[in-house]
View 1 (cartoon, rainbow, N blue to C red):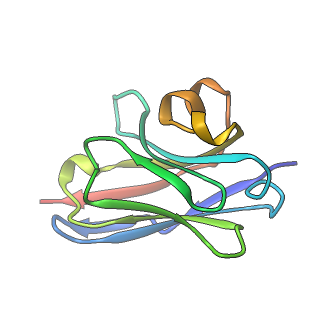
View 2 (cartoon, rainbow, N blue to C red):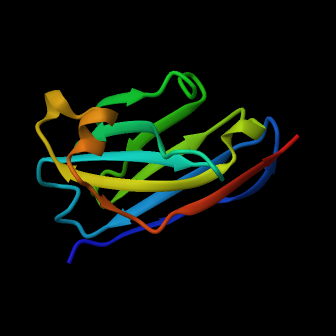
Length: 129
């Protein structure tokens, strides 16, 4: 069974940084895998943050995080990271990792969400002003 486990959340002040990790079974991230990070703030809908195709191909970002967040994959392809810099209070949310089998040219936030991906349990990020 596919399992995704997120970690790295916590509480930081505005302007700070955190790095989130999403660990999966090796198979999950090595076969046609489109991996993404989403977030959901209290009372709001889940929104996409970033996607990457296995092998570190074609990272994409939501406009709200572009230039501040970086998605990457470990060399052994078992872990996907989300480096978050210049954090702001509006980044406060539960962050979820998701994965689905997609072709690299359709590995986008909208396509990943529509593909009924496997989700992790989430990790909480709180940014105070």
